[in-house]
Image 1 (tube, rainbow, N blue to C red):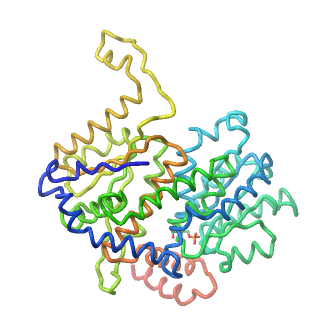
Image 2: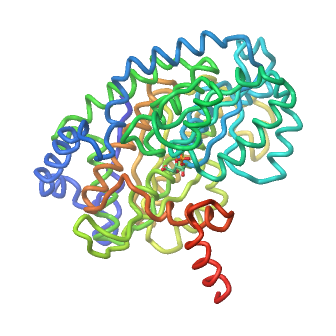
Length: 462
Ligand code: PA5
């Protein structure tokens, strides 16, 4: 299993002002944490709680349907193009970047074991969209459009452009190149998919975008490029079983949630930096940032009081950002907790040759890049503690489907527990909806005329 080391967040290491008496805090919060975990598990099947993602490690039916479709389209497409934004794209991006061979889209078909290349169109920049459409042969591309609401303007705009081009190139046959993942009943995409006869997959009820990576939202693109989704689901399930443990001393998600919550509310560490020491895990930091920000950044608490809470996530990459952000983390405001992610065993070992032996870089010869990267993580952690900056370290034995799934699922549970500690609803996103509605209004969507009028007045005044 993956593990968590929180010693460097303890006040024995970083001092009273910046660390916690962790064992004492675990004892103090033991009952509260046990209650939170019990409530999450008791409520996960209740409608409207936003907790169905806790069942995704047990969704054999979805796995079966995804595998069936992936087998059906195997060898038919050179490219997979995922259309999505936020929760419908970030999980896919994080997992494929971590699990596929590096530079996947540059490899030959043989090097990719005949699996297709994969592209995520996760924004609506006209230049990058234009550029992508220029290099993709749409006839050989399977387009997976993903939107839970079925109406998000960015995704629908991408979809309309691509559908139009597909139809121009393929005539009536274009439908075979589209698979839609959306709500089972509601939303414009569901209507269109049914009218047009696209193959569809379901974003389950009570699974928000940022918690949807282990539903068909993620599993379908993973299977299409040959990622072992049985291993993904096994990782989720094993982590779920481990995190059902109501004893905080045995539950790493609860430990990290409590440490983050207390460092924020008692010690002013309201910034959570996610810093994997692996380039393959760099998008895990993006995915975590959305999960943490959208779930915990809330105006009201569960009693309706205005609280404006939420730690700010920051993404970083080790060792790269040692040469960019660490100066600030060591000497700037002491307002952060830094999460290191470390990998015990990389897939490859890269030796540094014994050359330039009698120069100042001779000491590197005969060591490995693996040793160097892990030495950098160790030294950065110690240097941060010299400056009394708290850190925690999560260690993955290897980067594979099983451990990566454990990591992401652990973060989901950690977020849910943190939400309960902050006493907020971690599963809604009214702040996102507000901006979405304004966009609909500005772009002239039917039914948003009143909002458009108010918005224009505000913009004129501004
Ligand atoms: O996590 C979330 O809820 C959001 O990031 C959504 O995933 C994003 O806004 C896209 O929404 P939808 O899937 O409804 O199109």
